[in-house]
Length: 73
Image 1 (cartoon, one colour):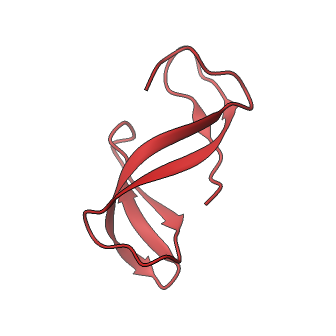
Image 2: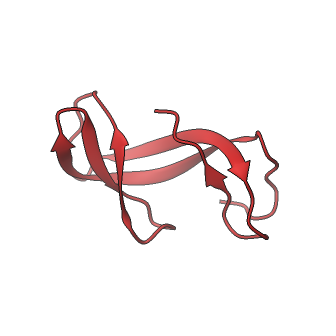
Image 3: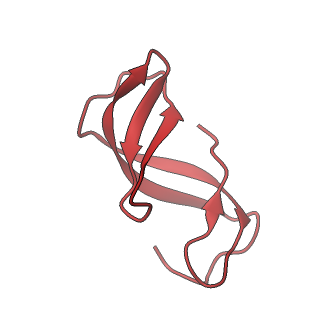
């Protein structure tokens, strides 16, 4: 992911990998640049280890590091 090229409102994609299903409508994902497990709403049938992309809009930028995105799945 390019750094410093994002503006508020830009749409970005972040790669993630499915870790496991948490509930019927949530899965735990691993985001390489986040270093923490994260849970997202995902009702589609996904399997452990499946790569997915998280898509959202930049809501804030903290310095020149990775921007925050709002979850829009």
